[in-house]
Image (cartoon, rainbow, N blue to C red; front, side, top):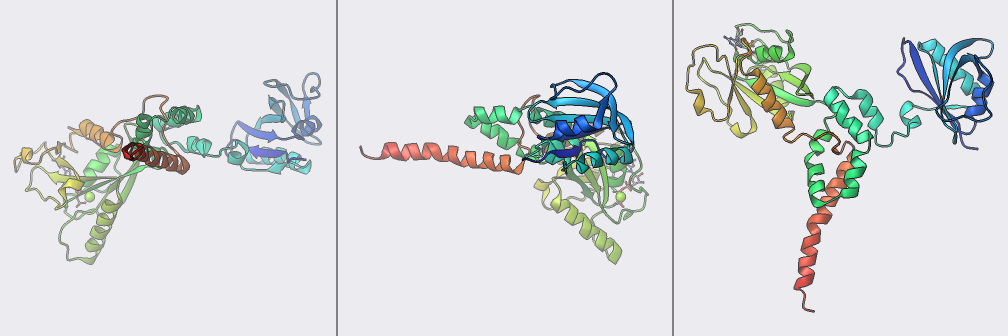
Length: 354
Ligand SMILES: Nc1nc2c(ncn2[C@@H]2O[C@H](COP(=O)(O)OP(=O)(O)OP(=O)(O)O)[C@@H](O)[C@H]2O)c(=O)[nH]1
Ligand SMILES: [Mg+2]
């Protein structure tokens, strides 16, 4: 006989209510043994979407709500008081009667991890994209599977990797240009130490935030310059490593001092800080650079918009599919190969003498 599974569907801890799922051939007979409705008796088999209030337990019992979710195979949920001991006690009652404890992911049949990702969605925007996937956006897109639809799925692949995992955005530049001040201005609190002394930040300082609903880890780094001191050299090495691993690199320059620019200019989004001070050079020479003031907040909204556009150039519309799982990304890549092969094959075939 197949197993009957039990899983605690709510997180462990102190709470008003916990939900415990029981599914399998023996689920209903176990419930009938353990649950006494406040009114009447339980039917011989579960009636889908019917609820009973009563008590669960034998010698000891606690009040609970029993919900029948499916008749066959029997699937019930018990909504009990929350709290580690009450939940453990109810789980134990079922285990004594032969139920097998499984994780909530296993219980919900979360083969592509969508429930797990939904539980860990860091922002409302990513949660709503994940809900669309849960509601079948991916299946609809795969049924359509036109070359244009597949192109679009491939374009959304990087976003799919960041619906839970944040993007890494690094702030780099010469010492004293205002990197830590910018981090604090974007974070909305003093995350990083700011002083007028060049070389203040020595290590990589992380800060989690959301820009335009996208989860981001902002990395403030040591100012880059020729350093003699070993501690500063170590900080600079870490800054360079953080920059090379980042999804987006922001190079900050001080508009009130002579500009210090990197040699690999094409890899950076340039931002000119301290525009509240008199300019020391012609900012228009740095094409595409965004002027801001970390002190007054000028230009920060435009900077956030630019960061958002750099990370997700064409965000999904509501209900649109986004590949969130490695297997789906592999599918998109493989379909791309098939489609790009297809015209080549038909051309060579038609070129053959008949
Ligand atoms: N006027 C003005 N001053 C600013 C602005 N942003 C930062 N500063 C000042 O510039 C100095 C250096 O700021 P930080 O944020 O510590 O600069 P940093 O780039 O992190 O410096 P290091 O950690 O040494 O590399 C401080 O005195 C800040 O108050 C700004 O937008 N306008
Ligand atoms: Mg700093």
